[in-house]
Length: 255
Image 1 (cartoon, rainbow, N blue to C red):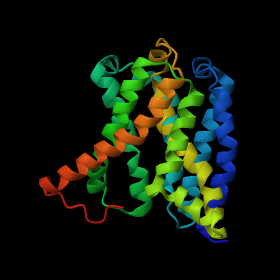
Image 2: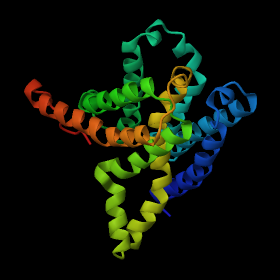
Image 3: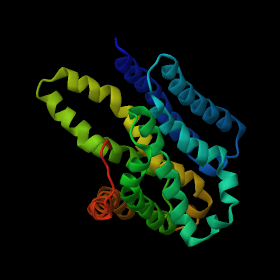
């Protein structure tokens, strides 16, 4: 078993355990965020994924992508009080800007794994995260979703679109008889689900006190949130990609 296969196997086992644990912990986010037992579990999850990233670094491999799980829990749980105490947090612009900056910064882990050009990478992904933050701003300010809803919606969205619809393509290859594609799908899907689920759930935990006073989201709002995630970030990213050539920015080497 090579290092890549080992990392996928470890991630699958970890993610299959962490996903239901997070559902259980955050059945009531406000209580969970102020409960010692929950804090111990969350800190353990954070440390495990940080440790995994450095474990592979010691082996001579880069696997900072594990931090995509630790990072949103870190800012959404550990530093939430500090972020909520910031003056900009109470402004409408801050409710857009903070999720945008937090999500955008997370691209650093992908850059570290693939040795991409950091500045160009960040410039390239501005359009995507503007759209994603707009979806969060619009829906979280108007309706009260549950942790289970946002983690599930974000996770399924990630499984669908990650790496240009990679997993759906592997699924089609798998049912056509490609067992390696099916194995890769099985090993990688839980981790991708968890990463993208926390894209929505991280800001949700950060803004929970603001969110819970809104009218409860009905099936229609849940459906429109799914639809908005499918359209708005990719649309804003597409528009930004059309603007970049006019700015004459060299994007050679961007993954």
